[in-house]
Image (cartoon, rainbow, N blue to C red; front, top):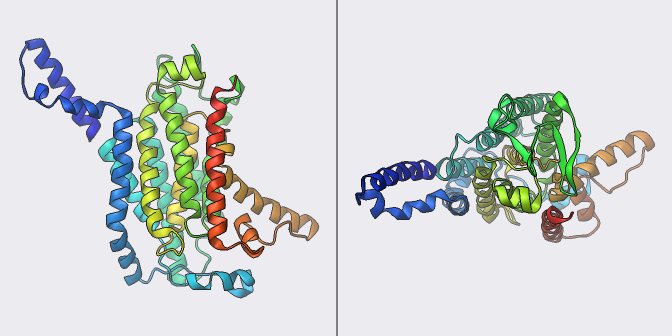
Length: 397
């Protein structure tokens, strides 16, 4: 909305200037502020935060009235962890609707929602959120910790990921497919969408051709599930989301500016990518707003509605900025959580032995004597360090 207001004002301003008149456009020249991505990104962040804060109590009361409490795994399933988390029984879940709603509202108001980068990230987030909502609803309806089956969930995640990946691959404004005047460039040279990049290398590491489509889908699915696994303690996934989304909003802004991207940093540049920073800052603001209610002791959980949506959005944003591999560093906590589960399952199947007391790894530290708040804050600190380190790699030549 703000973007279109600027466009309308700018057309009127140019028309007045040609005619030599001083009309309403000259009077309201403050509307020129809406031109700047930094301004609209800041407004999106504040708006998403404000909407979350105002709507939060009402959403929580509604979830409680609908008896949408989070089912907690029994002592037979998780043993000692059931004692530590016993007080969480009945805490309303599906709070991810707050994040989804505030992000999409702020995005529509503050960005150009028809921008292909914004559109694909927002649609992927919404689709993953809908899948998570179905999973959460099944859990609370059946009063069990098991929702939609793993195979069904993975199938629909792959469908969503493949649709998003195909859109990115064939949309000319993103990939330049069919029109060399669009797409990405690295330095002074055009870069195909199938290129795999990393800041330490000023040339693409490799080209995957059409295999980039399943590769993109795997990133989206993997990131979605990684955030879902991280969402096991009050505010843990939310705090890590804020740092990761903030880092990628900076990357999107830098990648959208020709001089900064091509001459100074030598990172993939696209003339349309800067607008994605507005969407990502809306996610940052929504994260802060949700954390207001989700910090320990949590009044509401995001559930799969929030975690799958956030993971889908971040994974798509990493692809959109052509910094897919950097997600391993910037989203280091999400990677740790996912890898701990993979290693634990693999070790138990192959050796009949566990590596960790329990996976995901945040439960390992809980069972090792760390208080829940200690685990959360220390993981937040690590997430900040991972994000800063990832951004610091941009200027290493």
